Length: 210
Image (tube, one colour):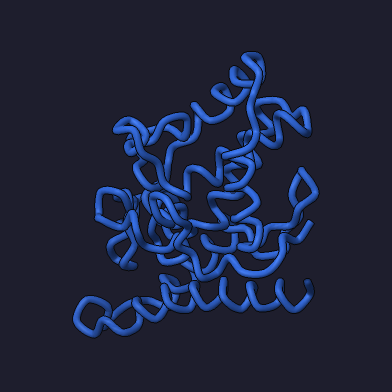
């Protein structure tokens, strides 16, 4: 498990390095890029994005290897009507990073009778926390948001830049949904939705860290 977390930590910082490399390798736009721009991106990433192995409120450290388990919970856990209400209360205040003009209760694909593995994994986690752990809506919402930030850091860093009045495009980032950019069958770790049926995610290897 220690080796797995260490490998995932290297992957997470490699992603951060890629973001910074984009800033430094665009000679025309960023000839005069100030050092504080790079530091800003580093600071936002550190503030917003949890790293592999981060503790969670439900006792399972963050890891890509948890993804298949969360998907299994999506398919196997049946909520009671009362639990379903908690589920909807929790997810109705979270946007879907794959299509953020929709909430996590019902993403754009689900409105058309489909769904992606990014959303399914989050709903599976929510169902587990409510049905097995007895979490309240606020606790579920916080846990699911933590998971989403972990698996889709690109979206949440882009949002943080926007909130500071900075264009994410300057860092080759966007808040425009991966679903709307034709990335439904692209791995979540590559900024996609992880597939509409079979999971597409090379990072989800090994056993869950529970």
